[in-house]
Image (cartoon, one colour):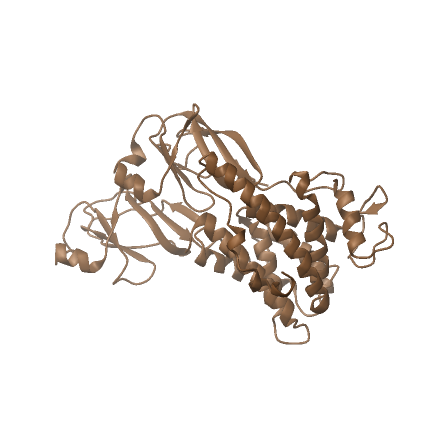
Length: 206
Length: 242
């Protein structure tokens, strides 16, 4: 245990709320359904609350290359440095005002921008002339919780497990069909919503 | 109250005539009986959930530990960035960080950039820190030292014979939440009845949160508890019972 939530244990604790003793006893859902709902809730949380922030050091600049791909799980970019010097975020309109040739002017980067580019990429201004580490701090999706249960851990405070529990209950009990319990689904979704507000008050809004 | 006392009281509220063999909760094989009370896993999970939620809502549980700073412990070569969760496994949020008894100033990463563009590589006694998400801290200037970190933590899961760490005044709130959580699964009328207990629990947490906030403000902690009094409980469907 190193500060992680075990989602298998979290889902096991949910079984009585779903009137089951084991995953095999679930009448209307499967373990895969529950895992998928957990993963979706986790990703929703990552979008609305920047809890899962990482410092990615995998990017290195290359001479003459102005655009770089961000990590595939990136939700939003918080901070970029060139080695240890912070770069300033900028809008393309401001960069154009400063230098109309900003996308090709070589030099040591001092700004970064994301607008006017494909999602998941970042541009550096001036365009780098050589190789240097580009550490990026960004809010990310946590790794997928897969139905094969290769990854069942979430690096987050324990109370996030309560959020996931209510989000899953709200989702499964709101599914159209014999198992539907609209009042309970609405309440559980509201409980998850309450916890989203609490987590945003501590970790910020996405 | 111990966990068995709290379980017993939950069974009382559920109108269970025999606390050694309750019928309205799921009983797992191997669930222990303590002092004549069956500690059903479902009820124990509800009590744990109540205490963990209380820790998040009110930040009542805090402790101070040593935290090593320096390149040997950081993500980067200079000692500026740290992942605290593998070390502070029960961390919710840092409240106060000090080095040698001198408090570091909480800052945003934008403030650090504005303060010193070389903050990621400035040797010296740590003076400022910033937190990013639930598992990334930055500290500047950098040196090898031991920080004292006061942080809000999530209490460890309770066992059948444990006593909750939440102040004893609020142990009845764990009973309220436990009853709500057991009734929740039935929906409809049982849910409505359970909401009354949830309201009692949230009232208790509002009071505890106000108390912790007053203490935190006096101590100038970096993070204050959620203002539960401002939360619109009607979203929970609880307006009828407020």
